[in-house]
Every structure is written in C-alpha cells, then in structure tokens.
Length: 146
Image 1 (tube, rainbow, N blue to C red):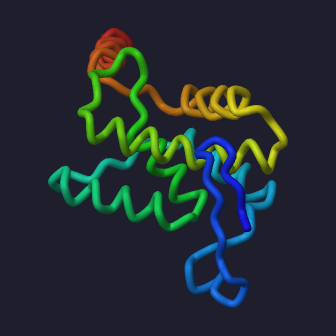
Image 2: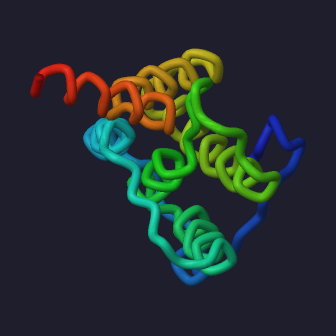
C-alpha cells in the first residue's frame, strides 16, 4: 500500500504483481546526483514533428527512469529570456518536473520547495539558451574576431 498525500490517493498493488506493473524502489543518492547533473547538459531537441516528440517525452516520463525524466525536464526547460512554451509543452514539462522533484524530495530529505530550487539551480547552470542569448554570443564572437 502506497499513500500519495499530495494527490490524496492510496495505491494498492498485490505483492506478486509489483514487478509486472512497473513499480521500482526509490532511486539511490548516486542516481539522483546523476539525474541532477543531466540537467546541466545541452538540450537535445530532435527536429521531428511535435506529436512524435511529445509521445517520446511521455514515454520517458512514464518509464520511471529518473535520468530519462531529467532529460525531459532539461529539453523542455525555458528560461525567462526564452519564448513561451505551448500548452502541451508546458504540461509535459510540469509533469516531468513534478515526478523528478517528488523523488528528489524523498531521497535527499528536502522539502518540495527546496527540491524545486535545487532543480532550477541545476537548469540555470546549463548552457545558454534562447535566440536573444545566441545573438549576443554571436556578436561577442564577431567582436573577438575583429
């Protein structure tokens, strides 16, 4: 029996069916660290249609693999300087962020807000993103060459 206090939900799964329904143990501290390190990488957005990418993101979120969920958070993250996300992008981002934050809360014994701040801090460490930032970087490169 598992209680999800935030969702006011209780999940009951027969012990012999635990593996077949996809339940797993909580990630250990090393996996959480690796997932947080994944957030600092460069976003890998494929040039396929959004519907196909959305399906892939949904599959990663539902896989339960914390590192795959971190990849979705990283790929869909938008800083304040970047253009707005579509509604479906935002929904997927929030679902992945929520799953990741909940696991970080339990494993690192943090509050939910501390967990979200830690994830946001890692995302901010990643490479610059956004058209305005790319233009500034290109202009800096031109000035250096001159």
